[in-house]
Length: 324
Image (cartoon, rainbow, N blue to C red; front, side):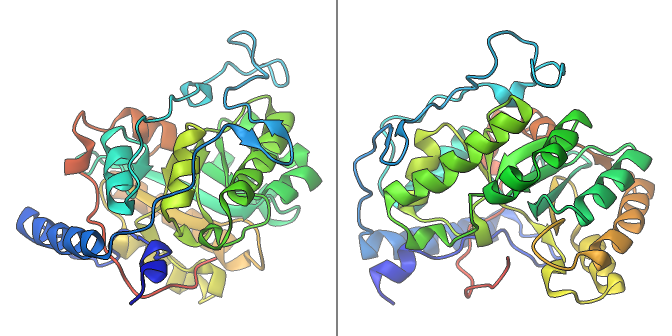
């Protein structure tokens, strides 16, 4: 296994239904740290605040000169605040993850001791499926987080504006959904900043939440996310709805993995999402009956404990996945 392969690995939260207790967690982490340390991962490129295609990168919510959003009239939420990069930032992947987690800036899960669940939707907006998702969320008075593709935002800004006006959060899912680990540092910046610009133009707010496509991160990706003050969000509950396994399967997979602090991954774009639409009401109703509260990722971040590393899911190195 070469250094390049380790550097581009996908780091997912555990998907098993069983819980991992602290001894197992420590053993797993030690094994991974030893492996990564012995391979001496390559350092990342020198960090810079310059986008080669757009000039100087603006990391703040520049569209907001007051606490009132001029585009929508909605009050600015805490998620519009610029976060300061962690400096100095480590060069080894496991150290980068640990540094970000210590600042609640890299999440697989929320607070594992609170009955909170965050619904997230990727790959939109879609002119057909996104309005259906929004209608269901409105019906059940649920706020969610949408991780949008930049080129879709540019095509359908009104849908992104509606997401935001409905009280949902809008996050950055890159411009064209590439595997960022295969890109140069400058291309990673371009993918993120083009999308941030499009979202800011649509909503008046520059996003601070970022989800890398496929959940893939490496040292370059995390270095740029840190540089831009972004919080990287992965997930720990998914149905692989992108593979259209059937409405019943989607419901079963989500409910079986749901627990305190669950970050649920579903999709409102990128393909036929009719099964996801059909499954969503049952998912919401069942989890509410189990006593869970649906929150945005910003609320989940606000409710994290002061020592976040102790509540994060263990870092594992599974076989590569093909999640959209």
